Amino acid sequence: MRSEHVIGGTAMSVSAKFELNEHQVDMPVKDGTIGPSVVDIAKLYGQTGMFTFDPGFTSTASCESKITYIDGDEGILLHRGYPIEQLAENGDFLETCYLLLYGELPTAAQKADFVHHITRHTMVHEQMMRFFQGFRRDAHPMAVMVASVGALSAFYHDSTDISDPTQRMIASMRMVAKMPTLAAMAYKYSIGQPFVYPQNDLDYTSNFLRMCFAVPCEDYQVNPVLSKALDRIFILHADHEQNASTSTVRLAGSSGANPFACIAAGIACLWGPAHGGANEAALKMLEEIGTVDRIPQFIARAKDKNDPFRLMGFGHRVYKNYDPRAKIMQKTTHDVLKAVGSKDPLLDVAVELERIALTDEYFVERKLYPNIDFYSGITLKAMGFPTSMFTVLFALARTVGWIAQWKEMIEDPGQKIGRPRQLYTGYAKREYVPTNKR
Image 1 (cartoon, helix red, strand yellow):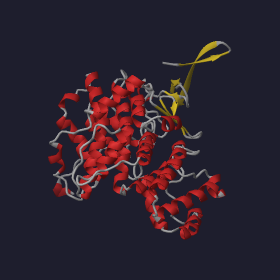
Image 2: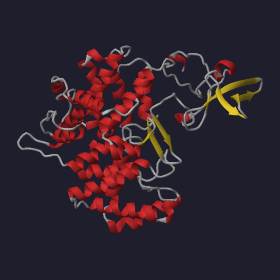
Image 3: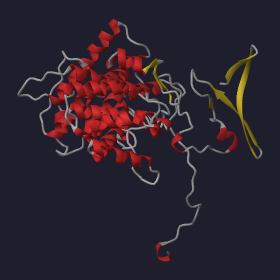
Image 4: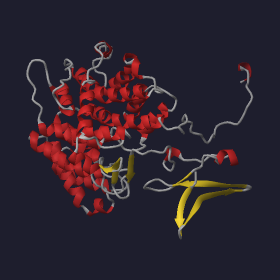
């Protein structure tokens, strides 16, 4: 397939030329709806015997997708074409889930039907209770999540046939519905409290908060400000294009693995501190600073090239402008702090650090704006979640993105099993030496 460009009213075929020694290859240039064009190198090895070398695949498009688009230079994040700001400010998480899964925003009737099905899939198999009892009492909630989500395939055999569109959709609905229940169970298990069953008359996020913080001996009233804030956090984390965990889900899925196993693989990848642990790192930095009066010395350290200290939660690998999600999280964070009336000194540190970062010439020039991880860590702490749960909440929110990406990959007729190549730098062929001659 060649990309067509119209020049002077004439459609012209555009390709890139690769020349090295006696090799000359014409490679098609493909255009997306928006964003940079790509050079199709699929036939490079067959025609030249050479591969490309791209550690981390940072210059390689690993797939074609219609789900999420990011422009890091302009600070743009679109889900199915809709700006993240509009989805977070005007909709709710389940509406965003529907959009990611089906490609369009739901009508009122479609939304009601979707919410009905999600709500009535929130319970997990009762034998899962005994599965949880096998963990040590101090098991990290993320370790519990990796294991319990992978174990879902042992409890729901009727939705693991990936060749069946109906089973794929049932598995998708089950994942979105049951993830809050499993996340709440992981939290309750970590603090030694009894599990709380879901309640069907509550909305998705309020139900999750109740499962986390209610106890059998008294009634629990969900704070609507906290529920709205957490729902917004879920929207902002729902999908983020081909990041490490999403690529992991796609790679696992390319082998034909069942969806529960693929999502468990994504959770395992997300657990890495370089990916899902950024908000926890930002909070640890605030703890290191400790009090407002100590901020100037840490700001000075951050500006010192010879000092290893770095401000966590500022700047972003993809966004070279302000993270569009951070703009929404900023307001959400302040709403939560006002609602809970927290006197935590770390939150005072965060507010002052935010003010400095937005006004100090050093940070403004370098576009080291507070990112979503800076705000989400503060917000979750103010809500009462321990840092060990931060990445669990990230996984809960990202599940729908993973599922949408997995589903898109499975339904792509050009999909192949993932098989990256390598640049081998080990020994060349050598002969085996018997033990007595070594």
